[in-house]
Image (tube, rainbow, N blue to C red; front, side, top):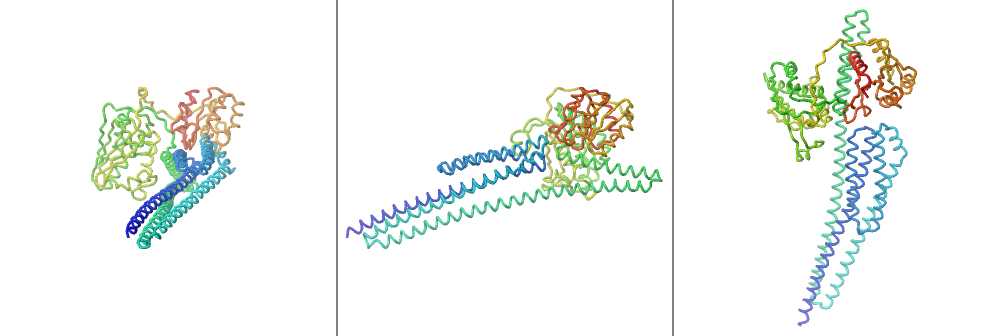
Length: 618
């Protein structure tokens, strides 16, 4: 019958149209599933970034390391970008948009809370910052953000379920239409129904596969993030363990020398020669402990620097004799000095220490290979670090630099050793042959001076270390005349010095030392007591004060003291500079500073220098 071919054609057309509609419905369903999953991932990203801001905030309160505030500001920028993306992704959902309005306000409050705490720490008000955390408002904001994001994620889940249900309903309506058409022509119905069922099963399988793949991707992302977090924590703990272990080991060795020598001196009190030797040993151990502290401050970029314009060619030339004596005759020292070299701005004594450290490391690398001799080369040059170089390296600013390059003919280093070369207490030398602090001290000095350091080495090919120090573009100042070394200066009884120190034993030592030098010394345990003594004794000639003290630090004491006595000379001292007289690692202009620990001779020369200089220092 002609009706059957026509019916068959109609059924085929209906089947084709139905299949196309099913495919489009499935594609639409997949798109909505993917969209919902992307929104859920974005919600998780926002939550993780908020938690990172809180972690950096608390880390800065505990450790006081500025890297936490830098990471916090970077995370805040990412957080704002993620929230903006979430706004765009949910633009078609009024309920989610209303939740985002509230989320914006909560996140803004959380960021303001974190920045307020960081600002208090930077202003030496760590106690106020911790009390602010203890009030619980930060935790309350975090709980509100958690709850709101969970609510938004739940809304997306329910929306996904409704969309899948609607697609299934549409599929069933299409199938019902096809079945109705099949009933018109029984002859062709069996074939059409069979084909429709095959297509339907394929669509369902594809949808299940897409859903399963999305779930697997989500689980994989969560597992990877968890693993990465655990790895970062392990690396941090390993670094902290290495640092604290190295400090404990070296300090215990030095304290053993000090305590043992003093104990022997006490037992041998009747033998003056042995007592003197024991005291010398104790002093040597204490000086080594002070040097270790200085190296740790250098690595953490906390040492006070006194930078001046430097001609690196003259500095390297002036070190030639020192290097040859230090390295020995078996090491040939060569210098290649560039003509027209720019000046740099750095602390000359610390730069000399850096070059000497690199030279000693180079000598040890040469000796370790068993060579009978070797060559150390020190080069200077002008250098420019461009944007491409700086983009791939943290903390490098593009611009003009003075390059000091130290190369050796030693055994070289493998990539894994280069990667850890600047870690404190990391060394490849035998036990007792090195502290592992030389390169970390150089690294800290260069970074604190605004420069960059790089190592180039291959096993068997020697090592090159490049120091890049910023070019100095200020006016050229002529060299100072050399000051002849004089005998230790002494004071007079009519020169009265006020010592302000909250640590009793240090205060007593300072007073005794000044009296030993011939000065008249008075003492105060805090700022208020010092101000009272200044008001009562107008003949006080110098204020010698610790920087870090409770209630009133040394800088504030000096300001209030000069309100009473304008032009009063001030000499600061501390074992940890903080930010009172040092900013960005540099001593404030005109500040007279004597770092702890100090010897009587260092105290004598510094006090004399400040008194004779009058009130020029700030």
